[in-house]
Image (cartoon, rainbow, N blue to C red; front, top):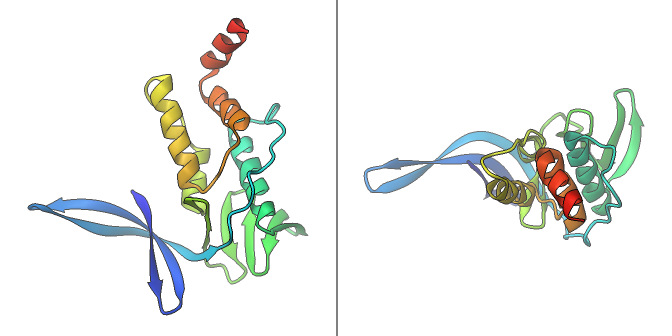
Length: 174
């Protein structure tokens, strides 16, 4: 499955799509509507000092917050807690959801990916897949799909939270 955008009138909308094969051709089947796409200029590489003391899921949340702040989102206190908001767009860190004030989902085009409920939750729920090399590759791919430009040190910390044996080996080699 992957994210596909479609321009309708003057706006772009994102959909979760999967390919199906039928007699020598492929068809795309829309699985889910992800929301209207908001395209902001890519920001600079985010500064993430450390992810120490954070769980893997908290690390993902923190990285999303850093990216959104670079794109002009600001923290707002609401009845449901702290959210990040830019105009009518609201990110709810506690649930990792992206909603417009009217309740409809939205998507932020960032770098080569899309920040939205689907990609962020997919990254937050990521678990070790196969050996360490394939896990690292798939984690990097999930970060790119989510539109997160993760600094090298932060990526290594995230990987070590998924593969704690890698952290032990690295410390022994130091």
